[in-house]
Image (tube, helix red, strand yellow):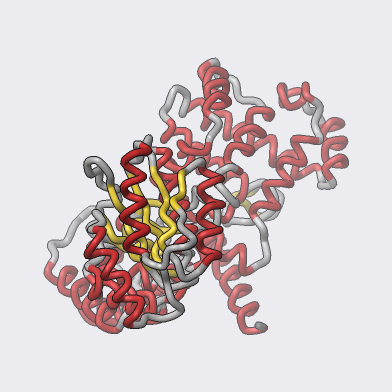
Length: 491
């Protein structure tokens, strides 16, 4: 997510790194790179210009903090301005008596009907009782899709395949919802391939006569500035309460997320980050700014962990941790829990300092998930006793384990050393909260992706275990970046 924007913003800040003092000229040069980054991210010219002017004004007028160097001060101001640009946002869905009515609108292909299902799932998980209304009478496939989603979730779907009047369908659906004890009705209205007068008149008619409590515009984030223009047109016609950006996980630029609120005044309420029904997140400007600046998003990682971890298994693991026990079997179970959060590349994107590494690994065709599978393969090559008691693994056993996993003995040694470090780490989190456990998993991800299989990060020198000096670390970073540039040129 936002890989292109993050890379360019990182380059802008690196251009200022190492300067003991930033002059007004230095600031202008660095912020010009920031402006270019925003424009290349498909943010509007107006947004990019106003954003850079605001950052420059605040930095030059700010009191110097002794706790931050000049570059850190610029970074903090940029972060604060990104949050202000995209916020404030209230991602909650209001409760109205007796029924909350939500109207979804948008162009065809934006993911509107799928988003209806995702919202329904969120409402079910929060203890509410939703109902879907198939108000897109232009496209029978949309009705079929909505019925399928309702069946998957166990949500009632109001369908009328005869009527041609969406207002009549919505009104009768609301009456049926009251009789069925439903407390939220989601209207899946018609879309078009482009904005036209007939579509807007129909949507305005539904809004005027049904009077929904919330109107959300669903739009594909990957369309960039077109998404912003569409949001403005729909808001002029309907007075939107929020925007839902879909396909944000595939958006390398981030222009829509940056510009929607600034141009339309309408906040982004939710973002779609995948095809599954659970892949809908509340939009938090502070977390999104952190991702854009390559600083991770631990809070979203924690919330995802709370939703997806096996609570019974966690309770059993916690009992063992409270006794100071952490075997390689436990490590394997932790890895399986972590896999519930998604791909390793996705998890690395949530962890501060790891997003850029994940991008670099991708450029070098290094797959973190494959590295984790190698770790699992090594553990699977051990006997149950060896997994319970790693201390008994002598040189002969190491040779057998390495042969079974198809690696050399040095990698077995690395795994055992990594386990020792993790054992200490896990004990330090003993008795902690779910948030502590998610943080622990993020640190385990660092260990497992950077250490055991040969130079994924600037931590070890070769397979000798010797730590790199700062000078060697910088040389290795430049080598990785050069390899990435060379690969791009070849393409």
